[in-house]
Image (cartoon, rainbow, N blue to C red):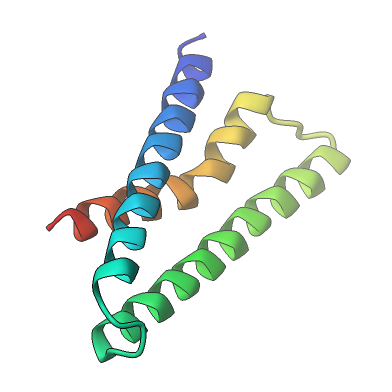
Length: 100
């Protein structure tokens, strides 16, 4: 039961840090020219991190699918937590980094 609670907390943290990160990025885009080296680097970093998180989450989903096909099915809350973990880590790190 505690694992289900942790999935809910992780989803809420992911949601809240994503909103704050979007807000801070929009503020950066409005206050700095988009062609400045700092903004180009930040935008490239944003895209790279999203691609990496997507690949990690996709790998977790593939692993869960293969395990379920072989009879080693994990509960939905375990798979959900593993799938959200890459996004949660990067979103939290981005929020802390952009808040500086």
